[in-house]
Image 1 (cartoon, one colour):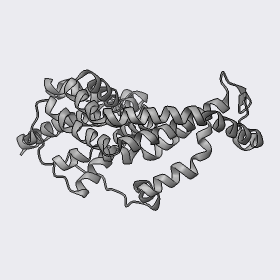
Image 2: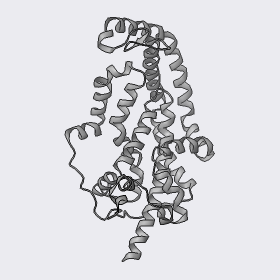
Image 3: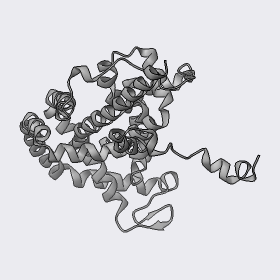
Image 4: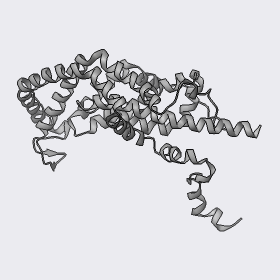
Length: 301
């Protein structure tokens, strides 16, 4: 055996992707996108704001609720921001050793803004987000559900595009049984406890609370965003679990990025819709690969 096959080059070769010539020309671009699933979040934002067939119906559905919620949110911010900032200042002044924060420093390092102001902006922003959600309520759910169908239709695909599930691996991995922590993360009550109680201290640190929460929600968010994909292929719960286990880190990275952006105050509501567009685009490329694998298996038999 040559020294190359036994040296560091052999280890590097384990991470090499299949050459492009192994896939047909119509799959080359999709293959590149599939190598980095978080890119579909960016694709979703771009498609939502550049395709009138997607943006106009979503805005018409959410326009009235957005205007009413914005007015109420501005009034709430005007009357409560100062009070909440002073309350946070009193809290931080009495617990700098616990939180690592003071008015001018973060763990002893000077920062270019007041921590009190940042925490107040984040807190009021979350409250305004809830106000907007209240006024949007049912309409935003309808808009994000419709945008999936509109995205698929914009690619010129009908119901017959989604074929029965094809196993991609010769030896599928075994799906580990869910632990108590998995069940907790999959329940809405469990996520509420984690986000509102366990992660509350992290919300005073710039972005840390949002990032930690997104990591916990990542896999569940990805599964929810691809619910329509699994339904379109009529996949069983077992097939869905195996498919997600085979693409575990793809779903984790995509779900983390989507949950991170959806967790941002106020503008996260926009990503709540655009992520459905991105998820539909990802599903489209995954399905093209399923077709390719099904064709290969048919030829081999």
